Length: 239
Image 1 (cartoon, rainbow, N blue to C red):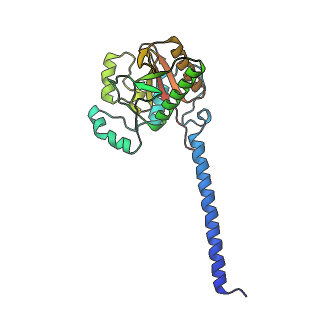
Image 2 (cartoon, rainbow, N blue to C red; image 1 turned 60 degrees about the vertical axis):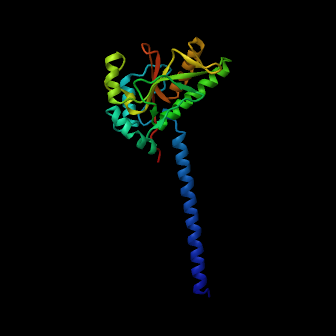
Image 3 (cartoon, rainbow, N blue to C red; image 1 turned 90 degrees about the vertical axis):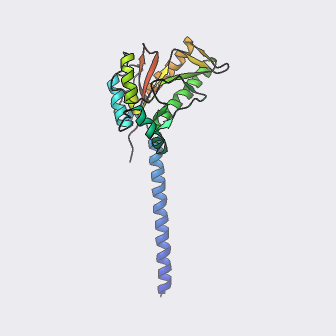
């Protein structure tokens, strides 16, 4: 007969083995789920349905709908509110600061703040990387594109509506999901000069059209402001 001691040992060993198997399955299941989320296909899994397009002419109301769904739940009302709360937003990874890097340069920001939600930062960096690859492929000189507007407060937006006929009272820029890239001029890397080049505009346009076909973002080419107005598309969580 098997002694009680051996039964307890066998039971304990079986329990530990089953627990280990359960934890392993849980770990890999969650790891796989996160991988699907981070690499999800927005054509099929955007949290607001989006149709592939080779046109950069998405309407402002669609930009706003995505911004409200994916961005700040409550926009900053005043510039003083922003100054008082931004450190907490950064600490909690709700917003990330945008800084100059090898891909792009911030233009003088007079009516916006250099912050975006993390998904918009990832998008901005992907555009920058693919723009650099396009320049290399075409054997063009190395340029960085320039960002002209990012997060705005209500106070910023209200001031803009009095100066800029393109600016609306309720903008996607209020939610940290949206940024503007200039197609008027670019920063040439080797001598840090600002230049306007047709082939550089075409390289950036080609990248944006390709990424719009992939449903990475919504975009409209603003003629008066000479910029691409871009709002990130976010995938819904997959459980």
